[in-house]
Length: 251
Image (tube, rainbow, N blue to C red; front, side, top):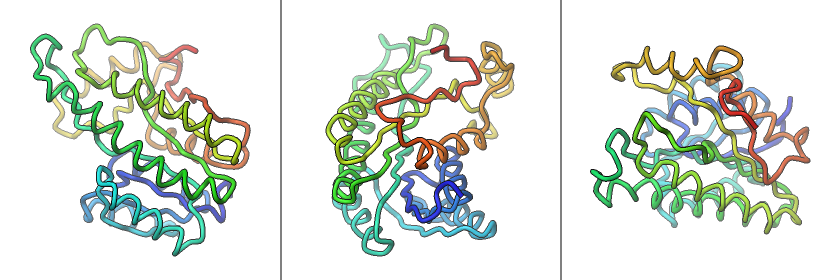
């Protein structure tokens, strides 16, 4: 298995993307530490992992809180011996659908402030342990992209661009210690849309239309790629972005 003997922390593991990462890591042999603010959601993912024969630990962690993040990372290393993979996919609280000229400052800056804060805290917590270990992988999800013409996305892309700058800098500082940083980008994953999301069917078709494969990435697709990138088989990949968009994003 690709991740046998590895210990992975997933922040926001109760959500669609976080759950996909966690399940894929566990399927490839990692011990997965699921964190989030809602215990019930985390337990559901943990139950799935254990039912499939994997190993999962659950902890309620506020990934925007410095002490909570640091204490949990230390506890993982104490319990498991290492922290090998870290990925943060908590919600940043972006407000979409409102044109920029009609937005409040608070709504616009929220995903930027939250994204930078939580990513810095979790990167730092993992990076300290990985530097000492001499290896480790920090994954990000999202990536920056072109402006969106037909939909107001508020500060979403600004936040993503900030996180990419952070990822590149971390790669430059910790590469000498064997620590890798990689972002996964998709053109949208319709499975993450709420069941009652207005216009979900139309949006799904809209996301699939520009792809070269005629379909969008699934949660399983995203998880499988993340597991590979986090594994030693991808040990030459760092300061990089991995395209998981089915051809919607052209490199």
